Image 1 (tube, rainbow, N blue to C red):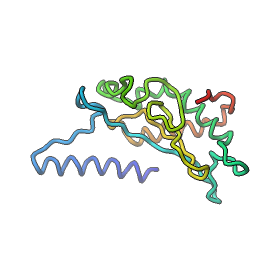
Image 2 (image 1 turned 90 degrees about the vertical axis):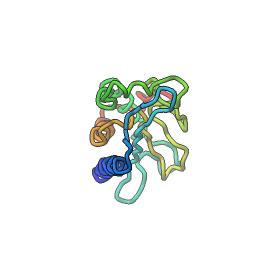
Image 3 (image 1 turned 180 degrees about the horizontal axis):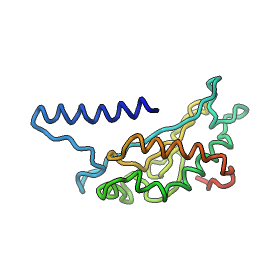
Image 4 (image 1 turned 30 degrees about the vertical axis):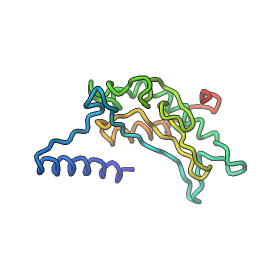
Length: 165
C-alpha cells in the first residue's frame, strides 16, 4: 500500500510539471467547479491470507465473512472522527451534494455509487470494500492509515454491529 501512495504523490507531481511545461495549471482540488462533478480518491481494500484466500469471504458458501462485517462496522464508526483527515480543505466538502454519486452519510451498500462504503459486484474471491469519502485533495498516506486503522480495530466489533446495506 505504501508503494501505491508513493505512486499517487509522484503522479500528481509529474502531471503538475507537465501541465506547467505546456503553460497550464493542474489541480487536484476535490471540486474545482461548482457546475461540474468533483474528484474523489477512492481506496479499495480486501484481505488475503498466505494461501491467497480472501478473508472477507466464507470459503464454504462464498458469502461475506464475519470479518467483512466487523471491518465494515469499524469503518462506519470511524467516519465522523476521520472527516477532517479525509477532507482536509474547505473545498473538500463541496463534493458532498445529494444526487452527485458521492456519499452524504455514513452508510454502505452493494454496487451503489452514492454510499460511503461500496461493495462492488464481484465473486467471493474478489470481495472488497471501496472507501469512497476522500476527495482528490486527500493525502494518500493519511487515507491509507484511516482505512487500515479500521481493519486493525475490527476485532472490537461484532458482525451484528454492522447495519444492513
